[in-house]
Image 1 (cartoon, helix red, strand yellow):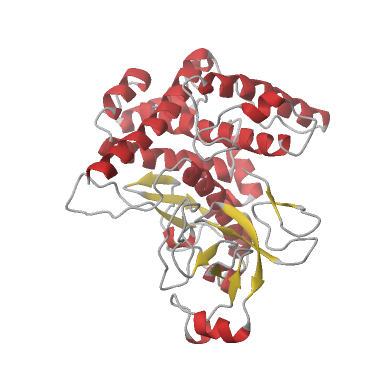
Image 2 (tube, helix red, strand yellow):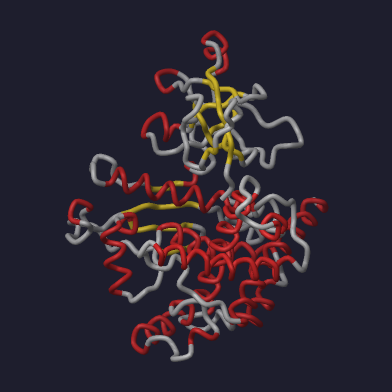
Length: 409
């Protein structure tokens, strides 16, 4: 994650979730068209009234704000109604080459992240509200990295055309009572399984409850279980489907690294929970769950790749303002819009791995000094690094395939 700064005199650091500059007091919001968190000032009342639109008429009208360049935005409706989202909606498409994305307006006043929601928790249950906030926070962090990697988070899906990938969407659902830390089932509710199917990522609300999630992690004997990890893992399944559709070289290349995904998933699932992982799983797999089936190996590896580049981007962002970190941190080439360089060279994956191994040792050591568990309790042997390299190369190849497709259209 990048660090951002306010443009006021003291230029304080702004974090991704900030909604106000602590120094100058201005509103801050994330601009998905520029992938930046920016400060905003309110537009004068007369111009405000004339500018309101994009589905914001009447009692639901949202105040208009402008950034330092005079570009006008409104806040996401999920902020004005629920204080859950700090993303901004441009009132008109970006008109210069500096914009990374050009998002359309939304009749419901939802930002590009919130309009992906199909189902949100029942907000009439007070205990659900902070859990939904936690889900949205993790989702937006996941989406930020995907946008930096130039991966599609929305698509013009044609159900009749198998060459178009399914749209990405989210369902946040519950089958147990949040007031009991999800110990008591809700009457009439079917079990909710966290997972992905046909572009829809479902997350059980219990994963946002710290007590319920830790209980599950201990029961499942897992080393790591977080909300952000769930989003990254499940979106790995989604992008497997995307790559299969848009890149005719992907499946064969995938099988050469991860194995045959046509093997029965149910049989693999039953075998995994009956017999457990192989005794030497750590040599070839990033987690025990990755041993279950090639699809899960891919999704776990994908999630770890996102963990790695996001954490290194954070380290790199600090290195630009701190003398504590070395030049090697500043110079490593993270992919695409991630970090401080525009793109990666072919050799940069090796530099990423070298830096990550050092960084993870530091992270774990710092936590141990505070009496806390290791944040990254994994060892990346060469076969695992080869799988991570495949994810890295697949993302870079996807960008080339997309560019060629756009040029030929």
